[in-house]
Every structure is written in structure tokens, then in C-alpha cells.
Length: 171
Figure 1: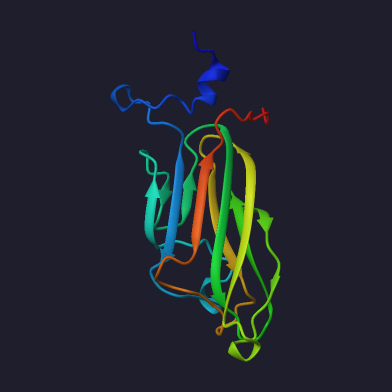
Figure 2: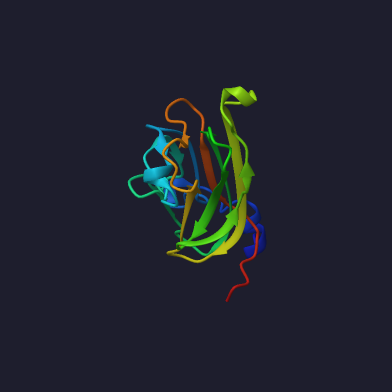
């Protein structure tokens, strides 16, 4: 006989015929266009080019929010490809309900004269969530108009998924 713990470790025993669709997950890749620092600085990233996600469609691609449909523990990671001609500090971050919980610190760029026109930054988050919470990703680059995330292709990826069996002890 299955117990609550074995049920969670089995990944919610997916069975579409009885309405059990498994744990939520989402994977995005590519942006439909460049995201410039002077217009997207510290703004939730939305309008992903390709979205793969679980049955209940937790990502609202119009506002960039991944909605948590149940209490649990999630893992999220985001990687951005960008150009940064003036070698300034740039950051990617993950937020839960608008509060930043994960942040990278990248100081790279300088354009092709430094041998690397394109750069990457990544941050990750493992966090306990409740039903109704939402997760977003952003970047910050001092509102610089010459900084941008690459649009198109398969560059720029964001993933969120629930961790089966992890305990949420927040109360």
C-alpha cells in the first residue's frame, strides 16, 4: 500500500484519466526579440519564443509569471546570453512574489576587442512555495541602452520544476 511519502517520491503518480497530471514543470528557450537594458532593466522577462510546460500551463508568457498551483519545493534556474560592450556589472535574478531570492554578479563584456562579444550569466534557486505564489526572472544592467539579452535562437533558458518528496516546512 502506498503511503503519502512513497506517493510524493513517485512524482504524484501521473494518470491523465483520473485528473492527476503530475508535478508542475516548465522549460523556456529563446526570446522573441532582444531585451535592452534601458527598457527591460529589472523587469519580469516574458514573451519567450518556445515554452514547454506541464499540463496545467503554469507559465503566463504574457507577464513572465510561473504560477505555483500547490504547496511544495521548487528548483529554478535561468541562463541569459548577452552583450555588454562597456564591461559593467550585470545581474540575473529570480524572484518569488516580487521579492528577489537569487542573484548573479557578472562583470564581463567589453565587446569583440576583448575577444568575447557574447557572454552568459546564470543563477538558481531552491525555495519552498505555497499555492498561489509565482516565480519570475529578471536581469539588471544599469538601464544601459548598449546592453541587451540576445533575441531569437535557442539562447536564454529558464526552467522551474517541483522537487518530488521535498518537504515544505514553512507552515
